[in-house]
Length: 395
Image 1 (cartoon, rainbow, N blue to C red):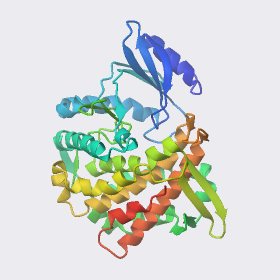
Image 2 (image 1 turned 60 degrees about the vertical axis):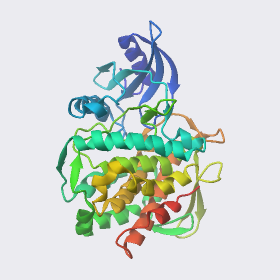
Image 3 (image 1 turned 90 degrees about the horizontal axis):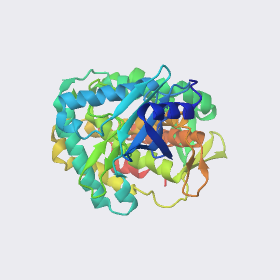
Image 4 (image 1 turned 90 degrees about the vertical axis):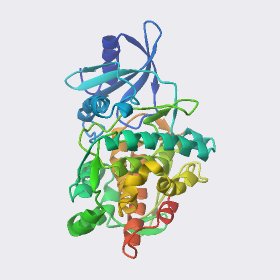
């Protein structure tokens, strides 16, 4: 089987599992192809297929996909209450250059659906349930010492691992020492992060978590949480694909990032315009420009965390807010390369196609904007103003 034949992988997996394949599900944000499927007795299922591909980032690659099942199995053994929240994998098959799994279909909506209906209260009530399960019955199941250079190892180096792919796809953006983004003069995020990594080791060590938790998930974006229609139950899918201990803030920042940048860009599409000038100036915004669809929830997110009882153990950590915002901003930047790994056809709110390169450029520019503001705030204050920081997101 060739790696450039996703339909062949799909059909071979369907035959192996004994399911018929229906429409493709385009909600996901990875290189995986996901389909409605049905067993011969009519039972609805979901088929997910990943093929080895060049230019696929870590987390979207075949090795990570194979590890997801091991991570779920570990959760079922060591964090059984949380483990039961994972949508079960009914069967899996692994070829030399591809793998597939089939799961029961769970009627659901994504975590952010109430926000699109204008119901912020319902969103936070559901997120309270999800975060409490993850914090109290997931991350708390085991702890481990955190190395002093954890932020560099896990958060910053993730961006640098993916940078070669970005350099090939976005040479103009990644080669610029200075970018003007939505009117703000921003230093290159590559330069900023290099200086943080090489010259600010003590600051990063102070911001590092005191302890790491059980690898409860690692990629809790709003589409990896399937919420029952009545909002009283949920299932988790697609963990990070790692059994290494994890900082809970990393996952909480994933939820914030999916509200602030990722989900709006994938649903509405984005616009990146070069405006010329020296340094080069860019406009980066969502399509169908209006108010950011999740703006109120994004601005309320950090205050909500401070009132969440399950956060008690993390709130004693003086660096948690800064670490949350830094990790959030790095999620935005690192996601730029992920958008290049995902070649599914997407359309914006205007019905027009949204290309992987457009999405990658948007994430890179917004990440540059956010990181520049964060570093600027930290030069004059011990802790950044989270609301001011997130208020700068483009609409």
